[in-house]
Picture (cartoon, rainbow, N blue to C red):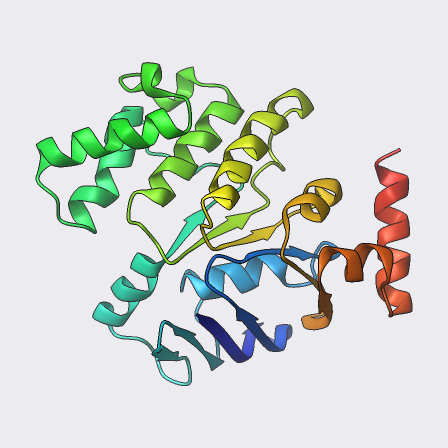
Length: 248
C-alpha cells in the first residue's frame, strides 16, 4: 500500500535521513523507535511533505510522489489527503472550538457542506469520547483531550495512513492511557498507522511491525517479537536496555 524508497533529507550539511526504504501494508500498524535525533520525526514529516526531502519517493496506492523535484500544489494536497498527521503538541486552532477544528479539514480538504461537516465532526468526537466538548475552546481541555481532538481531526479526511509523531510525549503520565486507548481502537478498526513512540510496551502490544531507526537509517525491522525479544544488532539491544532502565 505504501512504499518508501531511498528517502534522503538533510538540513544544511547535516544528513538526517540517509536512504530510508520501508513498506507498509494496508491495515498495518508500524511503530518507529530509536534514540532522539535519529530521524524518526523527520521521516513522518517527509511522508506528509511538511519537510521536503532531497530525493527518494513515496508511493501510496499506486500513486508515486517523486521527491527529486518539488511537488506541485495538487500533488501536495493529494499526499496530505492520504496521510494525516497527529502532532506532539496538538497543533489545534486555539481561536476555534473543538467542533470547528474538526470541521476545518472536512470543509477545506473534503469540500463538504458546513452542515454535513458539522454532523460528521460530531460523529468523530463521539468516537474519541469528547462529544460533550464540541463547543469548548482547546485551551479549556486537558492535554489528553486536546490530543484526542487532534486524532479526530486526522481521522476526518479518511486518510490511507495516520502518522503519529510521539502522540503522548507532551502528556502527564496519567493522561497517556486515554490517548493510547483511542489509538488502540483505531488499530482494531484496521486503520493503517505509523507511530513514532517511546512507549515501548505499547509498541510491543499493538504493532504488526516495529522499525528501529538510528543515525538516519533503518537498522532493523520485524515483528514486535523479533525486535523486542530476538533483536539481532548490538545497537538495538543497547538501546532497549537503556529504554528499560529509563522506565524503571
